[in-house]
Length: 380
Image (cartoon, rainbow, N blue to C red; front, side, top):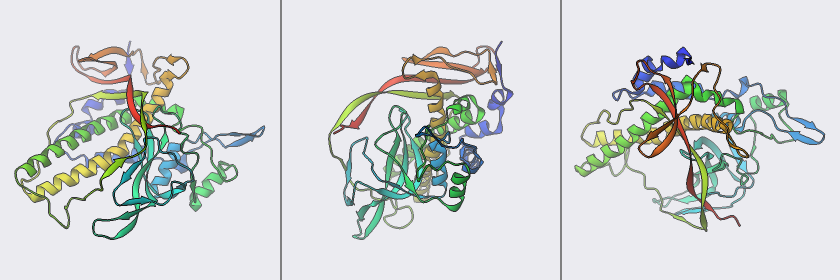
């Protein structure tokens, strides 16, 4: 007999769920709550100390995702002594990279790929000099630096990170005996035990929220196109004036590499249409502002949390040496099983968590593992 925790069964009737699927609700409070839930509190963690055993360093069980999130939270300045681009170099008009070494600047966010298990840090790279359209020169440009490679394994193009710890961080690292000389060595990007969160209410609700926000981004893009086609335009200068991004050109040789990808979805009635802003310039600016907020701030932050959880689950079910190993279940689910499920021509594994009545579409989680082609730089 299948048993599922009441916290999962009650999701479809919860206020959070109702707000997520309500197209008239902007979900601002829900986004804030989800960000707060997934925020790492470095100082409440109890990682095991790093020890030198027989001259060999034992990495700490504090995961790197946790530590990076703490640095992002205070916008710490980090330095990458050596970094090799994985995707191939891109040249932007009006920008000049002073040096390929010692890329440094404020770390602003954590980024996760939607398909493959690639994770990066977003940084204000102070190695970049920029000549703007107005002729003024500035220093610093947004760059993503890969931490975890396309296959979910450590990316060796980033050998180590350097930073100046705050007093609180220094005390924490010292008290926990995590310093080994002047470095911290990490064994895991995400802690292996995080796989259980894949079955938790917070993951399911956050995943639903990400799906809903992406649907709204798509709607806002369509709304802006319709307003522009109707003759409404953005202001030329001032608030709401569109930013002109520099032209880019991919340089260097790339090759196609086939990697394993992982996709997960929660079955729910995600809205496709939302409240339309006023049919004037004010409405056009509002639609753009909302689209930018969702696409470049809210979705990346929440997506990092769910993708980190999915990586821990993927690592649990798939062993690099032996292949697929089957799905484990946490203590709050018993008597359940994943079933083969097909949507059009795509095959999924699907787990029904709650179904009010027979043959009724209930709350279900599904995932698929598949092969995906990615463009990567040819290693010299």
